[in-house]
Image 1 (tube, rainbow, N blue to C red):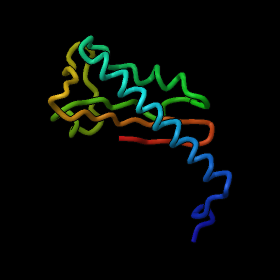
Image 2 (image 1 turned 180 degrees about the vertical axis):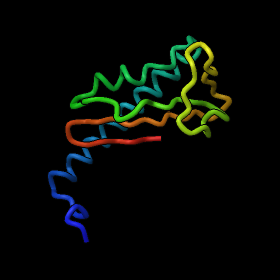
Image 3 (image 1 turned 120 degrees about the horizontal axis):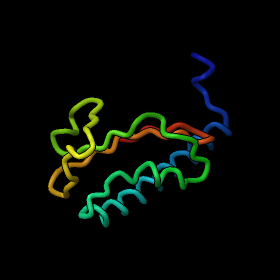
Length: 107
């Protein structure tokens, strides 16, 4: 087995803290999105991340899509040509964030 298979207590705690921060960020974003959806301001995700303790940067460009667009790999629409987020279809937020104590990837 590789020595990297086993994590130290410090590494495990760092991963736990990064998961908690990223999960809280996701809840905050979805709460914001639910209120602002009608205003058409769906791209607040990055700004909310920047307010989180120990946040460093996004790991990759966020893929935010709905309905059939959610199945398109690396979906990246042009601004102004985007479908509006709606409660009638499934929403996908594929995002990664780098924190001082861990790297996250959610979708």
